[in-house]
Image (tube, rainbow, N blue to C red; front, top):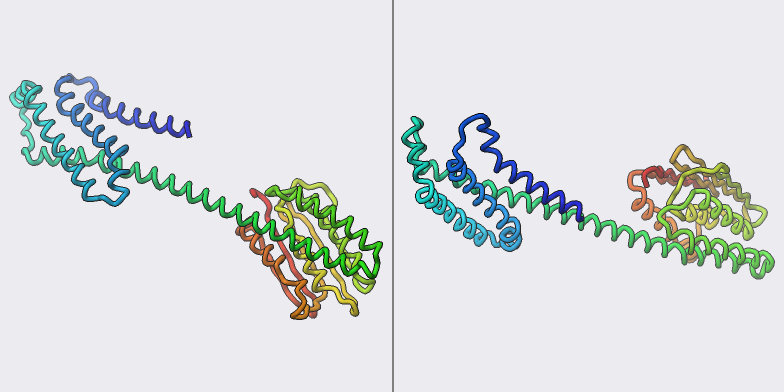
Length: 347
């Protein structure tokens, strides 16, 4: 902020200093009359400075932006007319000899009085329009910055809401799975509770960051798959394949868990054989993830597959990786396939 103000001040000083020096630069090597420069250049320039800064700091904010256009025009008209008469008065009373001498010694024809007034009028309108343009640009930049800040705040709030929404959803589904083991296998239920505590610790304390190392996310997914295997029968075959080498890839947390949850919800049957295949691979900074499972549609009164996880996932992908992901699902011969591709660079 301080740096931007300093640059703005230096820019203003440089511009006005250049304008003050302009007559000398244009007439370098020629005889110069200081009084003539003062009368015909410095005085109008001084008036232009007043018009510019009075509008820049006072009139534009107070009258133009609040839509008091008529008052704004009237005030500036009075100021410009006053400066036109004031300039003529100063020249006639303080620089009369210079003007008279110039008229006697020059063969050039002075422009008509009306033409001189028009030229002076335009010279005063220029700083007026420039102040309006500069102030409007500054206001637009500020408004755009505030809009972007508001958008980013809304984005962060929405992502946080989705993140918090996912945690109880995950916890609820996991408890349902453990509950089904209590009567069948108490020992497995105890093991599941211990595993769930580790998973919840990761979700509560390590996923509050915008991104996490992919290796940590893989470790979380593998623990979850092991937990889910405890509740399926021997008729269900679960295979998983994750990258084993260290990678520098970082990714938003908890993007894949909903897909695995969905596979165990809809791809497992108590009476039929089923198979779940989970594969993840990486190519440079791109993560490829796919899940294939049998399709056993849930009954309408079964609330365990409410679909919150998948809706949550799609929304988070749109917010976190706009234009950098592809999410596809297909159903072929009672096999449900979902594939997700995420480009993680520059996130």
